[in-house]
Image 1 (tube, rainbow, N blue to C red):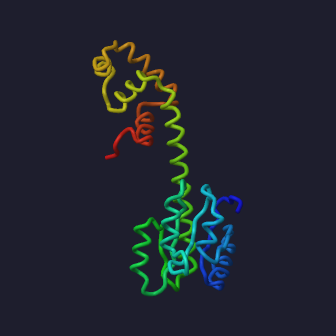
Image 2: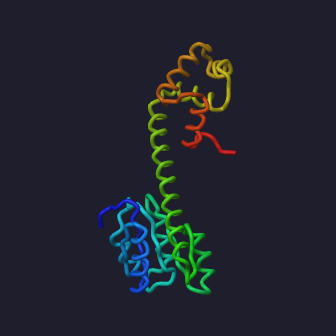
Image 3: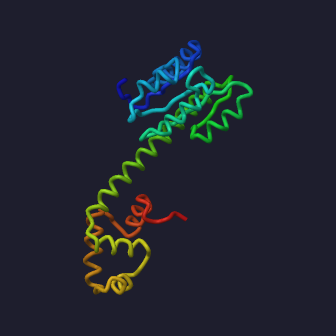
Length: 207
């Protein structure tokens, strides 16, 4: 299966449900692929697929919960929207615990489904941007020398140049030189920009 941007993957053993969902999603101009079973989807799903999954929670063979477990183990997990029947709320709760983005109880409103799909796709875009930004920051961090990294750690911890100089047994002027190098290599415009990068890279705990 080729990788398609924002393709909605519909998994349901009921042919009528698959066709109905595919028609609705196509009407909203969303690319759709349908699968009669989770086994069929797993066999064709690349690890880097973009989009989201809509799956019935109760299916023969691999259930919606089992599919969630598989998707969660992917390098880039896809958002999964679970469709449940009446009385399947406990299963829906279990699905949420396994990372489902949302669940809809049959019969559901068309707009509710489309809103859930758009929210799932938006969530994935945000996560992808954050992952890309984090990878870029980590690459910049790797370019720092050991001493530059020590100065960076002092800066994002809120220490003044004189304190960093004392801690590292170097002169404040030398700290200024290292600080300028850090700002250049990290492509930071300000100290606050540097702190934001440190937070994104996991160098600082968020409050």
